[in-house]
Length: 470
Image 1: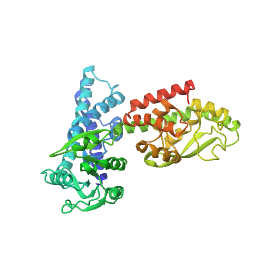
Image 2: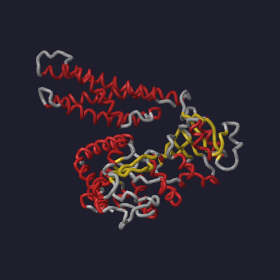
Image 3: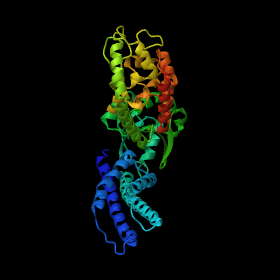
């Protein structure tokens, strides 16, 4: 479903709400509050008014954007939206008040409380009213089958048949617009043929998802088909689709799931969101800010390091090669060269503690992690993050996947300059150690948050200052 028009409606409504609130608030202060300071206060729309009218709504839109307001606009819960709007209004009003309004001349401190309360209630009521109208309009269209999400049913036997009939019989639609079904085992599911188009076998899942622009997947597997669920979920993990599964197979699932009752048909919705939208935005802002500051502050160190690398051995200053990033996308990663120029003439090799390929200065760089600092440029480009699993070469990924297929889960997020595995384990010297280190990166994936990122960064700084890099 194309959500660009709906996003535009939300953006326009939020801009209008913020602008209307500013006009009301400016007038309210002039008439009600400043009249107590000046006997005859008149509303004068001065430069400050127009400055606020131009910038404040844009500031609100930026704030809404980074906190995930315009994500999944067709799936908004009105109750959750009220809570989100309340929290956003609280934070935003405090910022606006202290940045723009605190130094205003008022007759008493009591009027400051009146001022911030008026701004808060005006902004919340106006903003939520428009959002409530938009989300209610969407809910009406979904319940009456005017809008729907392209849905693929995985399963072709009794459970799939019963679930399909239950969903289709609802007075208020849940939004599932079925385009067809796939069978999981060898049978093509004759029981479903009178109701839905048979699109093939789950082995062709990725192709079917793309061809039919699928937005929802419902898994209705029989007990005999449970063995294939792991492979199905792995195939769906990087797809931009919502995955639902019938409750009686809950005990075979791992990971973060939440129960959601969709009218008469309770389903388990598998949560693929690793971090809330606002934390993702803040993480990216921090990545760019810290990387820019680091490059500026480390510029003298870059120059000195470059000279020492140049004189330490014959060869280039930087070492760049292909690594695999988010969603399996290759990118070029940069490092200061810490090995002799012909270090991999016999093919890809991992370094070891007493590796003769490492230059004397290279050993120092590896202990202090100086060789990794050019990767701040990778972070700015968007290939990497400050914190995330260390990116590997495809040559070693293939070896890891043969023994630990769950490595593919790490490609759901951007690789990082430092990681939980890097802090706890350091550099790996062979594939066995790479697999051991991976468990820390899996832990990071399951516990990913800004707080965990800060802890990893603090420990990384300590390792650098103490020269404890492995």
